[in-house]
Image (cartoon, rainbow, N blue to C red; front, side, top):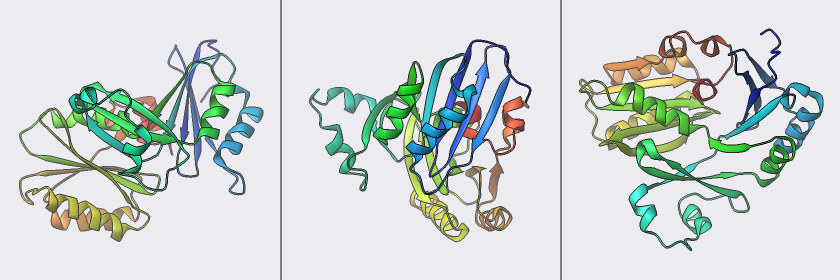
Length: 266
């Protein structure tokens, strides 16, 4: 992309599972996508601190910053969250569902579109590096824009029940909506295609989906894509690939090689 000369910019930082990437956008629509080569011997926070030192475009003219993290989410219905005592121990609520995240900062965010509250984690050192270098920082989970987009774009159209599988960061997030809210949402390891196939079909069966009549939508970085798609097609008649370019009306962001879908719509 040509260098952006507009002085007012926004920055999106995506912190995945051992990955970093940046999207700098100007108000005139120009942008620059910067995948960053992470040094495995350093923490993600240390890599990000170094990136700020060597990439001036991450700070020059940036007025607003979004930090997107790929971490597990605990969802609560909005009305249930509203009735809980103000002194609710968020740490205890999260730890009762998700293990292995003690010591990480817990973020609570509202998803008004889906009448839900989400609790997710962020590494405190990573968060501090961003706030030390960027103005007006907002923290977001990578699944927030995905759920909102799938709900608005696909769930509210058509008569068939739908299951969605989003592949990213060597995981697959499987979700379903019902009656204006999230009915099911869970994240599974997708390092291997056989595991991903098992988890998706397990959820399909668990939710009582119909092999001939219901829809399965898949998108993202699928492991052994051709094999996995073929196996899914043999079990689910109505299988649909979400093509980012067509889905986003040929948005320039959708044409960038290697950009995660959540960054395109976030």
